[in-house]
Length: 120
Image (cartoon, rainbow, N blue to C red; front, side, top):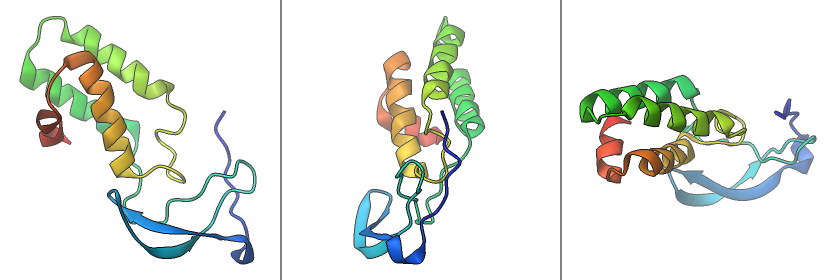
């Protein structure tokens, strides 16, 4: 069940490292959701929709030309759709989305990270 995030007030913010693409920097006050407790992503590395990753998967599929790849592609899309927080712009960063996407693609296609990252 997806949460309709509600930010906490300015006085309740938590001090956490400012993380951009896996590198942490100085501590910055982060708001969190009062309903589910999820800390909001305040970096410029915002999450994007699942459609972008489906298009990337389609380009990878066309490039590789593997027999039976339509089945693999469908299974990979189903795995991405099952993840509740994959499209959550509040808690997920694009860098985290890319890591999840790469792990799902490697599960079905057995290709190196570098090949996948060329398309992302």
